Length: 368
Image (cartoon, rainbow, N blue to C red; front, side):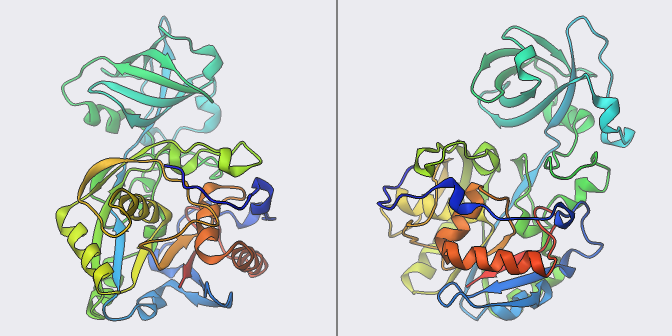
């Protein structure tokens, strides 16, 4: 969904310098030990904190909204027809050099009973009609193609598709994590409250939470609701247009239960603060509000394609916990829409200077 925003916003407006040494390659031993930069979106003032202080940033009556989507091992490696298929599992601890020469497939979104939208590399070598063998009983045919390496795969029916994917697949760590996935990533690249399988990237703001932190939040009489948005191309596809309003967001599946919709609507009616954990939660809530006429959230499932950038009129979210994001990304644009581009870039400059850890396994920022 595209919102008409009068001002012209350029991709170059969202660039910043980042030393690659600050890109976190491993999770911390303790999830909740991350640093947290707190940013006041009205004044632009910021302060250095620890994530364990996050419950103290919340007040009785706040509604904290989490994205409970669960990451599945969506990264697969295949042999083309006529070549011997070899099983490659995370337990092989396969190196990147060992995987060279194979076809890499990232399952992005299920579009039919046995069909998936996927990113395929090297895409130019994989035409429609190509047969791919992933090992075991997992086989697929390329039946369609899209832009930027996208393909449609039709899998041969198996007794338990996701069990087969669990055996053959790898956790889809982002490309800026320069290592192969290991067993520990199956647990650490996942929130402690993840339930609904379907994401190909973690809603990373939630990675900092532990059950103890959640208990402390509820002890402060903060209400908690959950929504689901399965992270896909809409979240991580790069922007290729200098005028960002020309960027087209891919759809991502979401679901809001009746219980969560009631909690959110009650908070809206009573004027209580709604705090989103992660940009995916923001997009779910704001898209659902637009679908509901701007005043309420309707329960149910759907597909969100909302693009949020500066000038966007927020209807639901008033505060946000989020990780630090890639330069020129739609995620950085969303954060800038809420807190102001200048405020955010000044805060990012401070974070770089103070050597915060960036991106998925990195530190976080609380905007209120």
